[in-house]
Image (cartoon, rainbow, N blue to C red):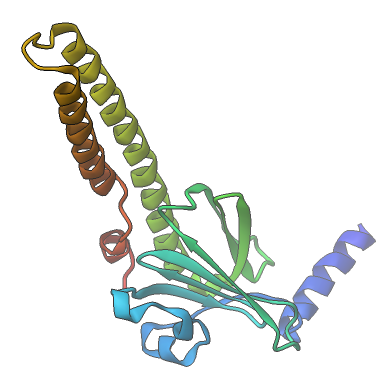
Length: 211
């Protein structure tokens, strides 16, 4: 019992004294004051939609990627920059852990590619974090659906190719058939890749994030 009380007291004391690494949600008008803003590809239409800043880290969610400025400690200026484009590093296992009675923070957890994240945010930002949670859930859902559609498109092409080979015209020589089929397959796969490899998820954030 005493250990539990000591742990609880230590956590509260750390928060009050500013020793913990609880994040704050940065308002849009202050994005330009963060370090993350220097790494946004504004020239390519990249835009910040949500930004969490703690003493040592910044977690910047843009329409195209998660940019994580990973600090070694609150007192060190050394940073590691990590960029995870959503279309390359898929989002999954998104969870939101709300605060208990004595907790000062909520946690948003997710996997992006092989990396697992658990970000502590002050509970006063719970409403904002709920919006981020819904956005990440939706992005993960869209990417998963697009993977299925892309697989369906590839299977459809293989079926069409097999059918074509079964009923091909004897008047067309093999070289012409091979060329025609390959050109069609290339155009088909290029079109479907563009259709199902979505890179800009700004419309998702605009739907759920209330700025």
